[in-house]
Length: 178
Image (tube, rainbow, N blue to C red; front, side, top):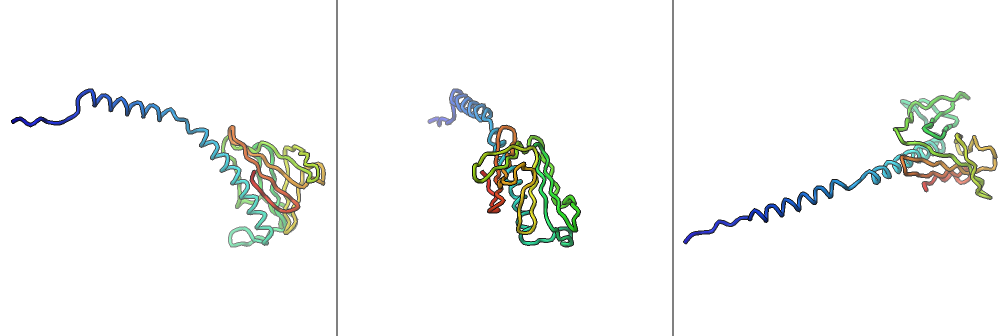
């Protein structure tokens, strides 16, 4: 008796190759860019949020800065502007100095799209192109808002088509992401 050698027919092999080809072509057409852009938008907004929160905490705790912790700032100033302007400065003995330990440069497409000062009573926002957050020990104030009754600053960030928002309340010291 002859033994038959088992194997696949040519039609079965071509069918399997065609199925694999269809799966590869279909998977290559999935566009992951919107998910990646949304993640980068969150990364930018969270980074800005964390920076402001860390400076607020350092000021509250009276933390020293620099190599070997040699500088004790009297107050901190966070300068924000629409576009890609973001600087942190601190003051020792009355002179503002750029915080060289925290230098911020935005990568391409990452911008602060708007800054809005809000009044707590009527919540009518007022848009600005720049604002300063001044933190001195346990006091927090805003500069750049035309009305002194404005108590919150809303910072809108954008990466390509995705936006994020950070709200800073000068009364309660709460910083929150929206």
